[in-house]
Length: 79
Image 1: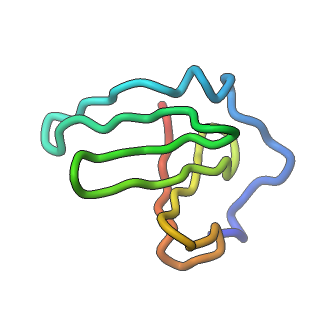
Image 2: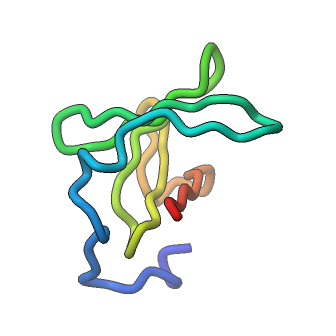
Protein backbone atom coordinates (compact mmCIF):
# COMPACT_ATOMS: atom_id res chain seq x y z
CA UNK A 1 0.00 0.00 0.00
CA UNK A 2 2.75 2.47 0.83
CA UNK A 3 4.14 1.98 -2.68
CA UNK A 4 0.88 3.45 -4.03
CA UNK A 5 1.17 6.58 -1.90
CA UNK A 6 1.69 9.84 -3.76
CA UNK A 7 4.08 11.89 -1.63
CA UNK A 8 3.69 15.52 -0.62
CA UNK A 9 -0.08 15.75 -1.10
CA UNK A 10 -2.53 17.37 1.28
CA UNK A 11 -6.22 16.77 1.98
CA UNK A 12 -8.50 19.02 -0.04
CA UNK A 13 -10.05 20.43 3.16
CA UNK A 14 -9.01 21.31 6.68
CA UNK A 15 -9.22 18.19 8.87
CA UNK A 16 -12.03 19.72 10.96
CA UNK A 17 -14.20 19.81 7.83
CA UNK A 18 -14.18 16.00 7.64
CA UNK A 19 -15.74 15.75 11.12
CA UNK A 20 -19.36 14.68 11.20
CA UNK A 21 -21.69 11.73 10.95
CA UNK A 22 -21.69 9.69 7.77
CA UNK A 23 -24.54 7.34 6.94
CA UNK A 24 -24.41 4.23 4.79
CA UNK A 25 -27.66 2.48 4.01
CA UNK A 26 -26.23 -0.95 4.75
CA UNK A 27 -23.66 -0.27 7.47
CA UNK A 28 -25.39 2.52 9.40
CA UNK A 29 -23.78 5.61 10.91
CA UNK A 30 -20.12 6.28 11.60
CA UNK A 31 -18.83 9.41 13.26
CA UNK A 32 -15.59 11.21 12.52
CA UNK A 33 -14.16 13.64 15.06
CA UNK A 34 -11.01 15.74 15.14
CA UNK A 35 -8.92 14.88 18.20
CA UNK A 36 -5.64 16.75 18.40
CA UNK A 37 -4.05 16.51 14.97
CA UNK A 38 -5.84 13.33 13.87
CA UNK A 39 -9.28 12.28 12.75
CA UNK A 40 -10.92 9.47 14.71
CA UNK A 41 -13.56 7.27 13.10
CA UNK A 42 -16.01 5.47 15.37
CA UNK A 43 -18.47 2.82 14.36
CA UNK A 44 -20.77 2.27 17.36
CA UNK A 45 -19.68 -0.49 19.73
CA UNK A 46 -17.33 -2.08 17.23
CA UNK A 47 -14.57 0.02 15.71
CA UNK A 48 -12.42 2.99 16.63
CA UNK A 49 -9.72 4.01 14.15
CA UNK A 50 -7.24 6.86 14.25
CA UNK A 51 -7.05 8.24 10.71
CA UNK A 52 -3.76 9.59 9.37
CA UNK A 53 -3.43 11.30 6.02
CA UNK A 54 -2.27 8.96 3.25
CA UNK A 55 -2.66 11.08 0.12
CA UNK A 56 -5.26 13.46 -1.31
CA UNK A 57 -8.56 12.67 0.50
CA UNK A 58 -7.47 9.17 1.52
CA UNK A 59 -6.52 8.23 5.05
CA UNK A 60 -5.26 5.06 6.72
CA UNK A 61 -6.98 4.01 9.91
CA UNK A 62 -5.28 2.12 12.71
CA UNK A 63 -6.44 1.00 16.13
CA UNK A 64 -4.50 0.61 19.34
CA UNK A 65 -0.75 0.45 18.89
CA UNK A 66 -0.84 -0.38 15.18
CA UNK A 67 1.00 1.89 12.77
CA UNK A 68 0.42 2.99 9.18
CA UNK A 69 2.82 0.27 8.10
CA UNK A 70 0.72 -2.44 9.74
CA UNK A 71 -0.76 -4.75 7.10
CA UNK A 72 -4.16 -4.39 8.79
CA UNK A 73 -4.39 -0.63 8.33
CA UNK A 74 -7.82 0.28 6.94
CA UNK A 75 -8.14 2.64 4.01
CA UNK A 76 -10.75 5.41 4.29
CA UNK A 77 -11.53 7.74 1.40
CA UNK A 78 -13.74 10.82 1.62
CA UNK A 79 -15.65 11.75 -1.51
